[in-house]
Amino acid sequence: MISSIQGTISNKDKESIEIVINGLGYKIFVTKPLLSEVKIGQTIKLFTRLQVKDDSLNLYGLITKQEMEYFQRLISVSGIGVKSALNILSLVSLEKLQNAIINKEVEALTKISGIGKKTAERIVLELKGFVKKGTLSDSDIKNDALVIDALLGMGYSIQESRKAVQQISSIQNLKAEEKIKKALKFLSSR
Image (cartoon, rainbow, N blue to C red):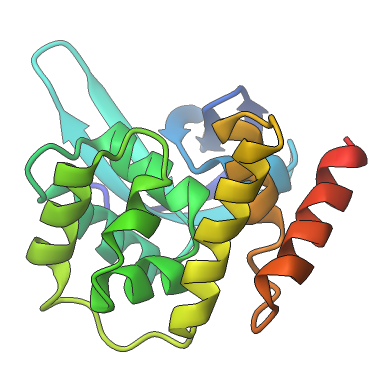
């Protein structure tokens, strides 16, 4: 089992990075936010999960141990594979995921690409014992869902709406109207 890896980034593509250690390159699938932050030539340490299949060995890497714990818990949920778990962690912060699970916010989880109502209900049911109280308020989660709904109503795609909410997710305790304005500002600057 490869539990962590540290080395220099030699290459990256739309879903993975390559880390070179002593002349050996490891392809590691990472979250989209991490992929956009890292640069070729940068030294990085990732906590990893090795997935063994009949025809391949794939490494999945996350920047913190806590993210890796959530990743492993998510893939233990029926219907959630490694790519879905990585997608969930790409599109929502750990705090928002924790709070959605604690507060049984199934609707907030269904806003994540590839997560339907039944899968969201399974995530809440199976992970509620694992998750500890987060720091985001219920209103932050509900406001993010309202922002996505408002953007969809204005004609933006679900992908654009999620990306805008993800970009403003670090701003907490804003009213839904303020978040919508910030999301529109983000979308208009692209």
